[in-house]
Image (cartoon, rainbow, N blue to C red):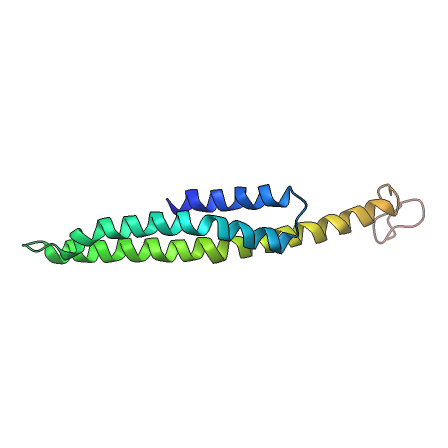
Length: 128
């Protein structure tokens, strides 16, 4: 469920980015747009796990620990989706921009053929 929310968050970011908004503004707006649906889903799942965690009986300890682990995992994954996914996406996008600019600058300097190997003379003959 959290992977789906992460994918929808990135899709919302790309949609806002397509409208010529700033990268950071697009990330913040996408996070705001996806906050309520994500919280609704996570709260519904945690509420569905409450009876399992509060159940009594011979296997209550196993059920309680399972409910706590699943609920905690959902909450941690939701927080990670809201904070980590946009941050990593921004870092990767910035790195792609920097590397793309370096690549374009190298191409702008002109196409260079295969250079001579180090340790060779002007004709490519290896010195001994």
